[in-house]
Length: 446
Image (cartoon, rainbow, N blue to C red):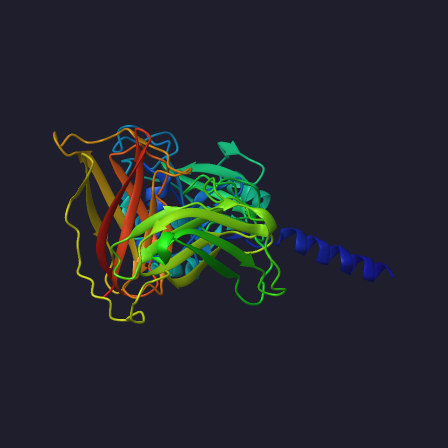
């Protein structure tokens, strides 16, 4: 019995001399100081892809696989100046920052997953921006804190989820490795998702619960009231039906201050209207409108309670019109020329990476008489502007909103187009209480 006790004591003594395994971490996010969060997200999505996300208590940015690019807009006025906790020199290549941070952790007994770094670099983080810090995720933050403390490095800031260290003028964050389930999204930008309540960083709308998937598509019944003499249409009645029961949908969640947005486009793409039918009895929506004889496409944009965002197309021909069927080869020519509408000049520049259908449409406003930049645009239906995008045969449509809320002179839209090709777009903004509409034709993709 004595021998057994001695043996156990020796084992315990040997175990006490064996150091615990080194803590391991993986690259979790890069955090940047940027002039505009929404513009930075749009640039990332348009160049290297990703999904816009809100990480509760961490930041706003873009998910690229299992790591993130996060942003805040509280940087210093001088982007070349270093701030406390920021790498000396202000700007530095992200790849260099990541590799240097990994070496510093390795040198202090914290093992960094090289595979995670290689994947991040492969996604295209080579750009040089105002990098605030590099963050690594750990299963147990306290274990990493204790390891670094044993090497003489003490956290200079702690939160409930993270610890921040400054090692050789480089700020490194160690954060808890967790991936909470996204349960909320922006109804206008469903790619913006979060695990906790918040606002969309693009359009500032409140995030709403992600609804369960439904089988089938919502439908819209359209009734026309003919104009006097039976030529054209003077009113429309719309009825939205549930995809499963076929019953009228009586509850819609307002999107940009209205329960229903209705776009009316003529087959020749010359007529355009953005209307908001009024709720009526039995779940119907009524709209007084003066439509000349012809063929039109109606695009209804709405969010049914308990459903997902809908963009439903309905083709109509007004009473008395004699028209041929819709043609799939609707002629479009690229048109980026400056437009002047009631004294307001609008110019458009398109940023579209090769072989990509993601693009950023950058509109700039000026006074047509003086060429002075215009900076007194007003919010229009809760946004700096609205953009409807259609292809030539009116089978594809996108209702887009700008990146952030601004009064001008620049309004930017980061948009995913359905496929490569030519698209007609109608931009709408508000100034001095008046709505301005300007049409362009853009080409995206190869």
